[in-house]
Length: 258
Image (cartoon, rainbow, N blue to C red; front, side, top):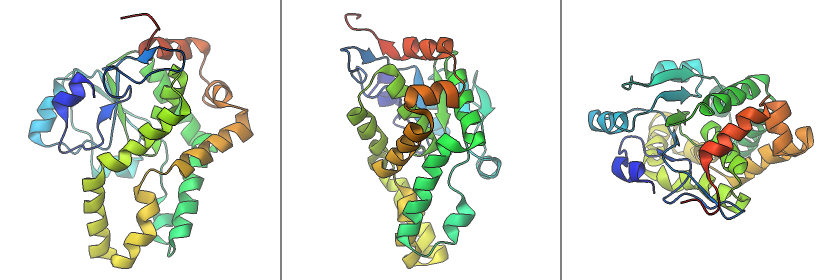
């Protein structure tokens, strides 16, 4: 856990964390490590007054919101001193389709479809390319969606891969969402049970968690469409080597460096 994250531990934003992982940062496959305090990820910023003050002290210069316009309208991001709010719509779970489902297996299939769309849908390609370009301007920056697990999880996974973190660590970091959001997920399940019936909790459960199968669905689509993640970053997201190299430099502490 980074010093800033240890200090924050935002009670009202339970999936707030440093992209680089706990101090001293995730190890890279070539013996380096990641630099903490540069990029942060989160679920939506429904902050208590105390947590608003704590987050303000991080000194963010940009907050990137990956939610759709209706999601933003429901819970707009609060203003933070010195931070520009940037909205980049990376379409997530189609809630109207999810609400119409009656079987858990269908919800799992829908989630795999959502992750494949991260690789195939023009809106997603535009948004993810724009967020990585924006992050290349330097930290500290925060990006988030609603739960901080799908759109946010995909961006974080791309950053970790770009920095040279191995896939086992990327998957473990992705799944960390499930432990971090247990309380907020329980509240969501209680709301579903109250308003839609207890049986719907089991139906919707696959949409409330991070599942490596979903991540693999996106990665399989990357391989099918672009050959590998480098091709996806370059040809799918339109990122030049200058942007990719700036991100690597921001994220990495090279082997032998203090």
